Length: 147
Image (cartoon, rainbow, N blue to C red):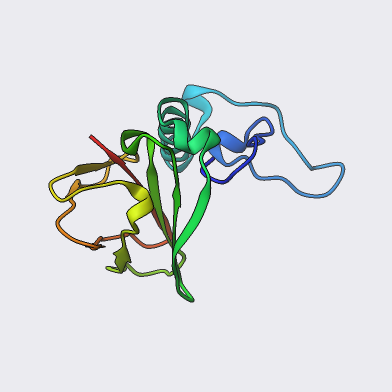
């Protein structure tokens, strides 16, 4: 949902419907009460990402720029001429929380004092220099956008 091009969701992907080989590749679509707690959490997270994509132009049409490339933590920006339409995505693939220092390249257009919110509901941050210390939960991501 945050990478360039049009995202593709096959039915059930939004809540993590398991699949396999034929003939068990997809089950019937399930809704609300039929979903487990984990599936409801996945559905809520998917809805949050889709809301961010629909409201932040950079996530739909912006140029792509890698800003941090580590073995286990990766950060990239989706750029836009309007700094309020830029998004910074930080991904943690480890089973433990991480606190990377993420560079803030000038192309973001974010000045000191810019307040950022996590579109997935995590804590907010304040830009104060050329890098940002962020806390990324295990096997999760942040989508930081200006408030």
